[in-house]
Amino acid sequence: MQENESLLEELIVAIPNERGSLRNLCESLSKASINLLGFSLDVPGEIGFIRLIVDKIVLTKKILLESDLKFNSNYLLAVSISHEPGGFFSLTKIYDEIGENIDYCYHLISMYDECAVVCFQSKNQLKMYNAMIKKGFKVLNSQKIQLDL
Image 1 (cartoon, rainbow, N blue to C red):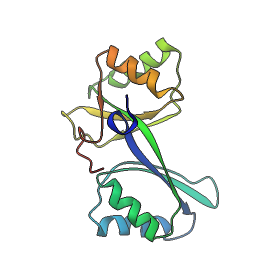
Image 2: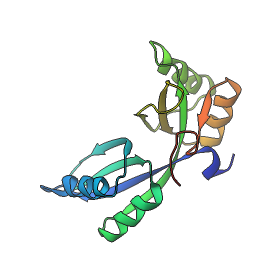
Image 3: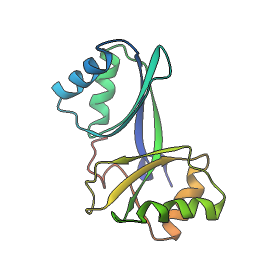
């Protein structure tokens, strides 16, 4: 498994916890026609963190740099699961079977095969990747969910 081939890049952006900061970020992305495919927001204090999965990662990084926003990249496993009761359970069951934990996860807007798409981070991504493949899950990379690296 090579990082950029089998994992999905996520951007973690630090934004001030003050009026207009989130709106300004979203406006900049909107003006550049960047689609938010998935995100989560955590505002523990004076600085908030928004995790972004976008359709145009290179352009998004450029906008963040031009906006003087600090950000980091992280790589997640993106897995297609059935969009029905028990779909997410089938994924969590594998974690338990191999003794791993999910550090965090979130759902993407489904653009692949009319299934739900779950992105997640764990301490041992390679172990999880191999377990997902062995159990027949579709591990999605950026090309499979139509992202522009």
